[in-house]
Length: 200
Image 1 (cartoon, rainbow, N blue to C red):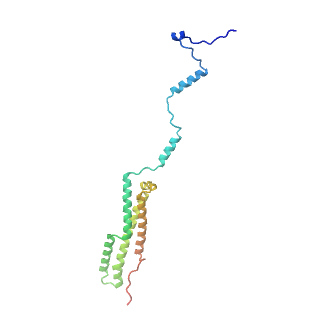
Image 2: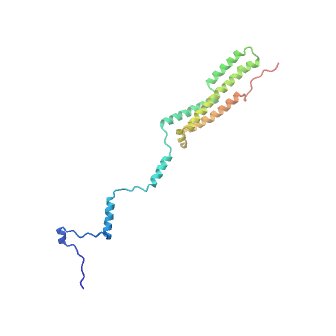
Image 3: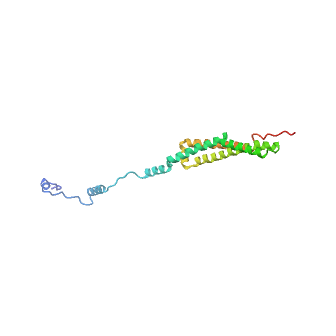
């Protein structure tokens, strides 16, 4: 029995320029070659599945925007001013002294011919209350300024980092609150009553 051998490409055929027969469509070799051609023709680059990018975008969106240099300067200066006003409400200012002396002089002029009780009230009580009023106003202004610093968006963004303006503003709030309490006690004569003339 004779066996037939598959046709082979001879050197003569190669030299003559004839090509071997191509694979018929549908064969495994042809399908593999077609897949390779499709992959080669497709020009794209896969960077990631997109999940990591979404997480990074969410993290960037969650982070607060960095405050500008101008807002940092404004809030810092306001914190210093508020703390100074709060300290002034405790120690008093030249303005409170001037107002007190003026009220005492006015009281003495009005009650020059009045009774001793009226003269004491005008000469000591009115100036005392004037000091309490001025110190109370300073305390209220300090509370407003320091509260504005604490509630400012740029300042709240730096609160997590423990910025010095936050600590100074909180200190100003505490001092202003104490100063307001002291001014109220002075106004209502809690610390000391007016001198009284003994009955004759």
